[in-house]
Length: 158
Image (cartoon, rainbow, N blue to C red; front, top):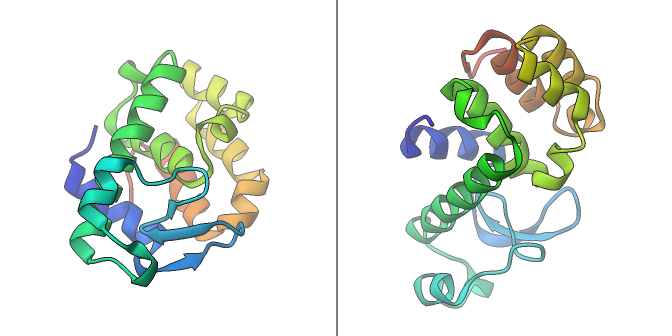
């Protein structure tokens, strides 16, 4: 996996950072860096660190939550994508980014894209990524992720 610091930087770029609670485009109450509080409520440990989030959280608390989310999503990808361990770091990141954004269950519905990745057809996988509701919903982010899948290199530029 790429470093935690780099993953935090990229996900913050894609998700944004809000220290106040907000409703995300999908209609879920969220906070920090894309933390969906409805489908992924704070754990008791997180509550101890974050405190009363209803009036906002600190940047440190947001990063703490994000690190926990990254670990959780990474483990879900590792568990559910049989060839995860043989992927290079950048393609692992691309799938982690997608799972972070839409959840592992929705990522796993990208059967053709995942099959293409498994056989090394990265161009085909990138096309599948772009030919989706996900791509329509997240726009430039999907273009970056598709390019990462195809080329094996992440870039903030498209």
